[in-house]
Image 1 (cartoon, helix red, strand yellow):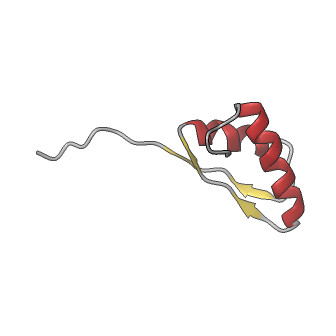
Image 2 (cartoon, rainbow, N blue to C red; image 1 turned 180 degrees about the vertical axis):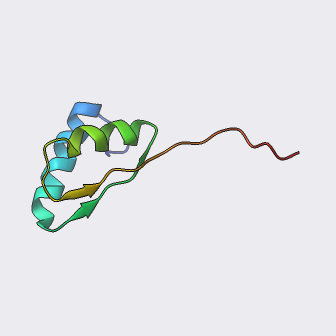
Length: 62
């Protein structure tokens, strides 16, 4: 993703270009907006083997 992010579509297009340039199996990991970007970017990419999306929840520790 760009910093600051441009748009989900713009960042996904950029990421697709990066993935295409690697030419080997790729694992993408994203959180929050990054999860949307990797999901959209990986939808049509062959070398992407995994797409975990990280989530968080409030801590239960006190």
